[in-house]
Amino acid sequence: MNPLYMHEAESGATILSSIAITMRVAAAGAALTPEAIETVSPERGWVRVAVSASGVCHADISTAAAQGFSTLFPVTPGHEVAGVIAELGDDVEGWSVGDRVVVGWFGGSCGHCEFCRVGDVVHCARRKVPGLAYPGGWSESITVPADALARVPEGMDLFDAAPMGCAGVTTFNAVRHAHVRAGGTVAVFGLGGLGHLAIQFAAKMGYRTIAIARGAERAELARQLGAHHYIDSTAQAPGAALAELGGADLIVSTAPTTEPVAELLNGLRVHGRLTLVGVDSGAVHVPAAQLVLKGQVLTGHLTGSARDTEEAMRFATTTGVRPVFERMTLEQAGEAVARISAGAARFRIVLDASENR
Image (cartoon, rainbow, N blue to C red; front, side, top):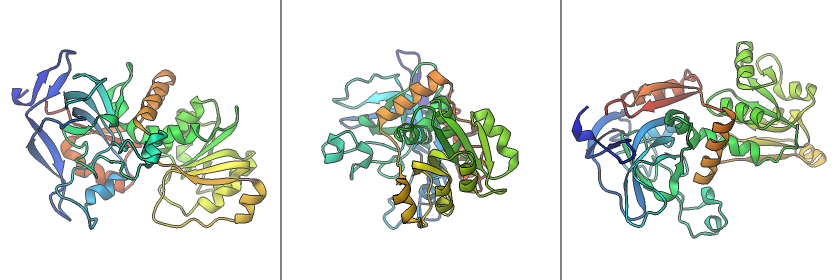
């Protein structure tokens, strides 16, 4: 180990100092490349975190492409970050150097708007997203607002914790906030980074869980995750197949496509809800009369706050919900993006930012 890169906190945790390796896109069309940067002490109200693990989300594909008109370079993606606090800015209370934390898609808010005042911080118009509002977590070090921190519970590994900041809290909230009746049926469309967690959460919450994905070969895997039934969407229309199984009180659509939504509505029970989590740039065309006559709801869901992430992690720790992921080095971030883009990743990819320390 190079002593320039670390020191020991009172807790015994290895804390990054001085120099950090960071994956950056320097200009439009440029590749992700590692750069050694000097860390800077956090400003008032912010915290610097020594990153151990950083997840790769489907949304990171566009961030890494860095092609938006308003993109400010250099760009460092990453919004599923787990590590330990290395340094506190002034006026930060309730946290200590060495605390294990997660920073997710929610990376801070204004704290005083209408939404923030009622606790709906993810819909704050001035919310911050790591990788977009400030450099993200594909780095050995990240500096974030203190209100973005979620405490990792004992019993959860930091590599399991990282995906909880986006994929975990998103699916956890999508299921629990639907208020499905006790013993009800939850269907999950898509068996990827989001879907494999949604299946676990739904099953552990006590719901009859139905997984929907492409290919008969994924049936056994879905059952290992907790699904009670499996529908192969290449063999039969999934909405019609759901209806044959009695229908679903909730369908969580996690696949990044809107094309199947209209047909999926056929699988909802009366007063059922279809929640969109994964989407593309397409439009949704639905039979309005069906929604009215059956009292059904088609809605979208974004993610969750730092507090929601803590609750998702505590629930996961208690019930055994865990992400399934491939581990890659920080320097392999570009390869990880390519695997996610091609649909080749096994559910999730987590970058190891601690390997060089």
